[in-house]
Length: 162
Figure (cartoon, helix red, strand yellow):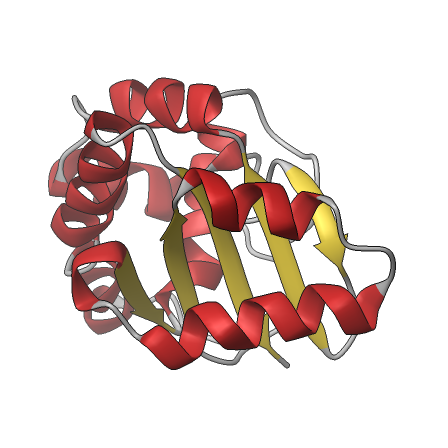
């Protein structure tokens, strides 16, 4: 799971459409429509930081449904809509508000402290100071993404093509 992840904030219609999908092909079709819009005000590119971020927000594993809510829902939490060569995880608008609130007090020092306490099984990074600094660089934007989505009452999806 080392490819580039992206978070998208969904309006109510997009959220309704993606939740109504019956099967992987329909989910991918809706995600492709959202991606094609590439509305920079409603997305956040995580690049490859999503792996380390998810581990730091949970119990150190790269897995679905691990860690404690609401931080468990930042990246790979929520409702898994598609798994395989393409991952799509959905976080409902009410959960987005709780995720945003949980992220708010966290800073780069918290992330650094958390990073060094974990042993990452199957982690593709190296875990050195440069890796930690790279991961820390995404925290402000991630917090802003969830804060803005929460203020606008939006759901979110995390997507990554493996």
